[in-house]
Structure formats: C-alpha cells, structure tokens
Image (cartoon, rainbow, N blue to C red):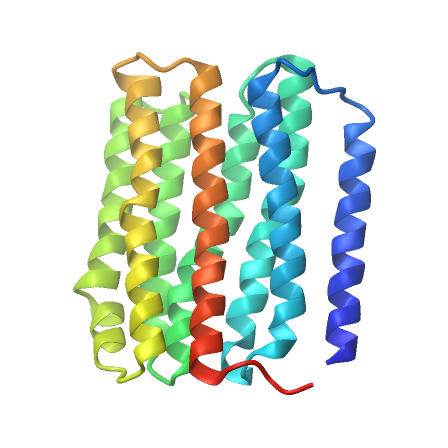
Length: 256
C-alpha cells in the first residue's frame, strides 16, 4: 500500500511540475476571467487526483479500481486543462479540439464507473460495459462533428442527444439500472442514484451550451468556455467523490 501511495504522490508531482512549466510560457491576465476559469479547474483537478490516488489504498479491494479511475479522470482533465488554458491565453480562441480530446478520454472512463461500481458488488457484466461505451462515443463524436463544423450543427446535436438518451435509458431502465436496484447494497444504490442524477442534470449543461452557442445564438465563446469549464469541474470531481463516499460506506476505512 505504501508503494501505491508513493506512486500516487510521484504521479501528482509530475503533473504539477508539467503544469508549472506550461504556466511559465503563457502569462494569465488578471482580468481574463475565461483564462482564470481554466486555471481554477486545473488546480481543483490536480487536488482531486491527489485525493483519489491516496484514498485508493484506504478502501476495500472491490472498490479500489473505481477510485483509481476517478483519479485518472481528474488527472487527465488536469493535463488537458493546463494545455487548453495556454491555447486560450496565447490565441484567444476556444480550444474545441483539445476539449473534445479530453472528453473522448475522460467521459468513457466516467461511464465505465457505472460498470465498475456494479462489479464491486458482483452485479456487472460485459454487456453493460459495451452499451455505455458505445452510447458515450456516439454522443461525443456527434457533438464534436457539429461543433467543429464537419457536419451540420443541428445534425451533430441530434446524434449527440441520441447517444446521451441511450446512456440515460441504460442507467435508469436498462440492465445497469435494474442490476443496481436488485443489488441489495445500500451504498451502491445510493451512489448509483447520485451518479445518474449527475449524468441527467449535470450533463444537461453541455447540450444547453451547444444549443445557445451553435444553434440559436445568445452565448458567446467566452461564456460558453466558462460554462463548459464549470460543468467539467462539478461533474468530474462529484462523480469521483460519490464513488469514494459509497466505498467508505460499504467497507469503511481500512486499518493502517
């Protein structure tokens, strides 16, 4: 366990050093609220990564993978947010491509968390894994193609929404939702319900931003970036904290 914590601290230190190096190449103006939002999110992601990696050794073995994946999500997001901040500061343009690269890595990992928490109590199967993964890829690819202008923005929105609705069906009424309800594990049921609310309510911010940013107008690039940044901050860290709380409730803190 000491080796795991040493690895976690080393990984976080390396990410932090990388962030400092990037910060030296692009100065952040005190009145650049969009740039400040990128910086704020990156710092919270770094702190979250340290927390999840260090706590992975304090939970029952069945939950450990879920906690580590939570740390990977925030760690990957930290690296991307540092880079996106630099792109914004140096060019003044929205880092759409790099944001979707981040999402294409971290969002599937978040969806896999549904599978992992079910696996922690022996209620998962590979079908749940693949259905959630496919729904996520459809949602993200449709959204990116529409935002980047490769296809009609409305068509991209429709494809992305179809993927999102497929995910919602799976976690509410599909096999994943039914497995959680029948698990008999109070901690899992509570965590699964909270995670579903994040995917339903928290993720609703993204299509709303898409609509007002690319379909109807009314939201400029500055506002859209801040909206996306805040949504990422809340959704990614909250997801991991919910899983950590369930792990602690289910197995308690391991003795040192």
